[in-house]
Image (cartoon, rainbow, N blue to C red):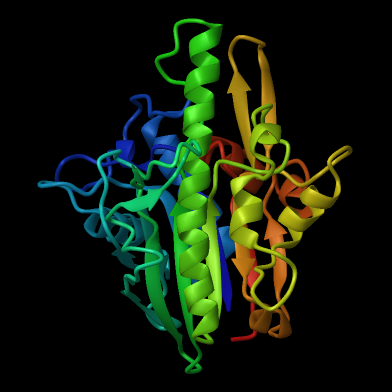
Length: 334
């Protein structure tokens, strides 16, 4: 079985308020890409992935008039994709939902949120002392993680948590001091969200659940200068320590072991001020230790780093047009 995580930049902008695709020459929210070209590129990538289930990060909006599930299923029907069923969890106010698009003949998926005193439900609040002042702060997710119970066609049951942690960008900063203050406050919040997620992970592992944690964590070892202030990235917190309670992702582990030198990347952003591109490792597929015995195989579908993607001119162009992130796949014998 192949699972994927794919952050599709502003996927929501390709749909109208009736959840129908807008396939015309108007500009999408992607830089220099039209709506019809982005939609076609996304479909090309999804067909090439041929995944049984895709965690869609930045899925179409869910609100009083728009439906994430309807939009994704309409997209799949129009493009003739076998991943034609969709499920979401708690919606959010960012127009960037977290959803699973899957092949109903390969597996079933249901929203299965959990709650405990140590880790409340992800649409609630989490009490933690963010700044070591002996005062509990309440943290919320702007994008509550998606908790799913999956059952494969072969009868294997496992849990999937899809996450899109809050960006640390210092929005609204007017000077260097404000950039520093907002960046540090945002990192505290993101690390608190990682602790919250880690506590849920520990509960599931203690219950003997097979677990996959996937998505865009907007963080990684060495990603910014504020990491040293706190000692660990949110990725390290979510992974946990090596051992039975730790999760495993080879790209994350490689990046952690190699602070200097080349490391895998899953995203490519244009930096306007510097007129260049920045690449970063932001997207992960972490698995529990029991799943490491299921012949796991990871792949980052990077148009420049993956030889097969580079050699396929159509796929290479589609990966660049579809999103500023590239999909990551995980093959498992389940």
